[in-house]
Length: 489
Ligand SMILES: Nc1ncnc2c1ncn2[C@@H]1O[C@H](COP(=O)(O)OP(=O)(O)OP(=O)(O)O)[C@@H](O)[C@H]1O
Ligand SMILES: [Mg+2]
Image 1 (cartoon, rainbow, N blue to C red):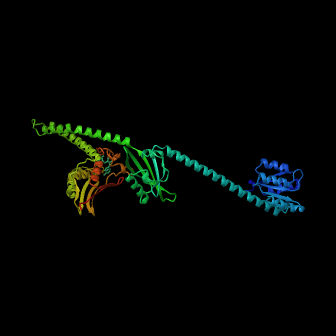
Image 2 (image 1 turned 180 degrees about the vertical axis):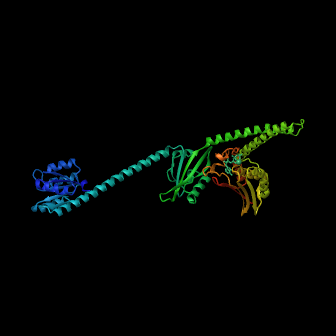
Image 3 (image 1 turned 90 degrees about the vertical axis):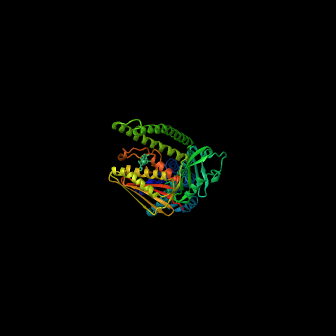
């Protein structure tokens, strides 16, 4: 490692120069020699010298002067003075004026090398320290650059960004947030959250996140209204490097336009469904008049055709009713006639109704009820819920499968589970199956006809009854839907 150390020997005596050169290169140092002070200074000016060995008694410029210049211009370079016997006093003076050490002629090799090694070590340490310092400065510079870049990005974003600390004070926000929250004047961070938003549901969410019982990698999405705008707020914990919750981060997006489009689409679908239902009902009535023979007897073939037409009309009417139900649930106008209801008979009826279809598809359908308690519910709605869940379980199970409905009272709730041993639902699809019109693409269930409205209606109905519905599923193993409904107390 000595080869990284460059030593300049300035001495007017050739044997000394050559001796030093031989000994030091033998130890792996890089050595340059200069025969007088001026030449030595020239070398210093152009070479990255690490150590100077300097003779005091020289013509032209004396060693003391060279030492002085070197100390001034290159204060980091250690200068080791070479002195003859009579000049130790001068050497001491030189030490006072900044020389690193001195060695006396004639050299004792060991002593000489020891002095050089010490100076070389000092140089190495200094260079290392210098390198660290430069690196540190560069890192700080990069960090600052990164910070200002990040700030620019956040400030330019169309979405609002709000970061709070643990005390629910806003410590970072961008112009988009102020625009979305309709706050005119600039605010200085940190500000209490209610200076930015008074939306209780959002503040509650942030409190919940700060409370800590919240999975790290998850975020909470909610819709809030500000004036005429609808915003989607997505909030998540801000974690400190040790993983503790240091605050919250919320990103807000203006979804007013999407909402309006969605409402227009729903209104349109609703209108079309309404317009289609009346003529369909009329066609159905006319067909049933034909079938009942009220316009004269029909031949067998004619009867068959009219019946097939009736079946198609029935499935169309079912679809239209589903569409209208969804529209009503979404508009909050779902009419229910909730009465104290025993779910047992409804479940048994569902099983009886679905049993032929299950048998036809080679599926065993069973039910068991325990500890039943009455719930406040609309029986027709409940029928619809169980029919939908059981018909899904049958539709999405291969031949030989089992479908089980179990109902039991659990404290203040009635739990109803519909379990199947069917194709299952991949985890990434699970959050979407309750969306209207959403259907999972699966090669084994391609032939199943459906519109993707069933589960949207089920969820809407259960929620209108203050209940909850959850699903668990493993692909190729099966699916379980679990409903909880509050019992009458
Ligand atoms: N028990 C189940 N096993 C596997 N996949 C299921 C199950 N229940 C629902 N799914 C999946 O969820 C999707 C949505 O179900 P949903 O009942 O809402 O619609 P659908 O059955 O396709 O049509 P329909 O409106 O006629 O009920 C289905 O298309 C299916 O992919
Ligand atoms: Mg369905």
